Image (cartoon, rainbow, N blue to C red):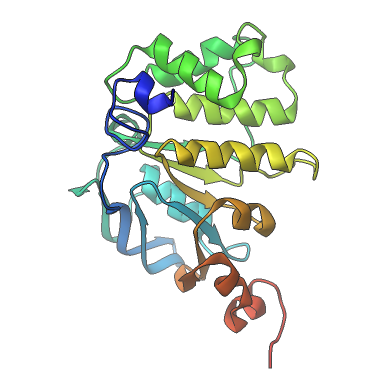
Length: 263
C-alpha cells in the first residue's frame, strides 16, 4: 500500500496522499520573470522556472548562480523585487513561509539542524503539526518515518544520529508536512560515495509517491539518477534546460559549470 492510499486516496498522485491529483501533468510551482537583488548585487534576473505535478526537476549552476536564492523565493523566505510566484494556480508571491508550507511546499537544508534533545519521532511530529490538513500529525509522522526508514529509530534522541541518519530525518520532517512539492537544497552534500545511493533511492521513492521534486545539487551523477529534467542556471538566469544528458553535453553548460571550453 502506498502512502497516498494510506491517506485514503485513489492512487499515488491523488490529492489525498503526499502528491497531487491524477491526470496529465500540469504546472504546480513556477517562478515567472522573477528578479531579486541584495543591495546593488543582482542575484536573480528575470528567472522563469516551472515544475510540473509529480515531476523530478534538478537544478545545477556554479557557486553564486542564484540556486539557493531561487529556493528561498519558492518557499517564501525571500520576496522577489519583481515577478510572480505561483503554486497550484494561485499567486503566492506575498504568502509567508508557514502559509506556503500549509499549502504544500516543503524545504530541506544542506546542513540538518534537528532538535537534538528531542526524539526522532518528536522532531518529525513538529513538522507534521505545521503541514497540510487531512491527516493527524501522529499518522503523518509515522508515515514519514516509514518511508525514510527511520521508524526503528523513532525513540532515539536526534542528537545521537549519524550524518546520513540526520539527512533522512531532515527528509522525514519535510515529508510529515504532506507536501505536494519538496525543495531539496544539496541534500546529498557531505555524504560519502557509499552513502549516496541510499539518498538517491529515497528521493526516487518520494517522487514515486507523487511528490514533485526540485533538487539543487553539485553531485551531478546523483541528480542524473533521480530527475527527468535538468535546468542549468547562471547569474540568475536559465542557461539551458532539458533531459539531463542533453544539458550536461551542452557546450555552454560545460564552459560555465565545468570550466571546459568546447570548440
